[in-house]
Length: 147
Image 1 (cartoon, rainbow, N blue to C red):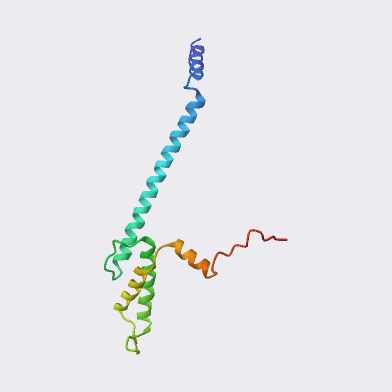
Image 2: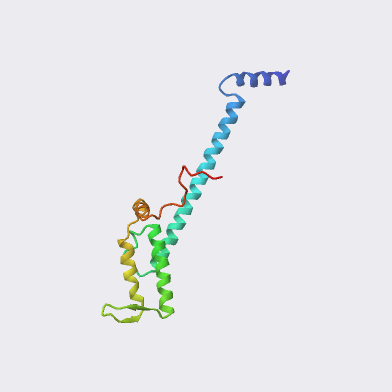
């Protein structure tokens, strides 16, 4: 009968708020919280790694103030800098203010930096401009029917 007492005890517990169903739900809820916390921690670490690598990339470019660079701006400048260095290696020439041409050099990158820093990061403004220019999305109109 000892087994019956345990069963009765367990059965009485199921009638209260500590039912097996609520215990399972509680365990699942706790597992979800733990999983979410681990996931959040992984994401935080990933973001820190990305931030470190972007700072490293920015430090390799001849920039005055890398503290205020957004991620996208850092990447844009990095691609421009790579293109700039390729141009130097390929012996590209650029127009001078006097109307002549000269070989591109290391210091010319500052002009690209200035242009990028003047550029707005507003995607909304860019989307509105593209819509005005007729460069909107390639989605068909809503009322268009396909046969």
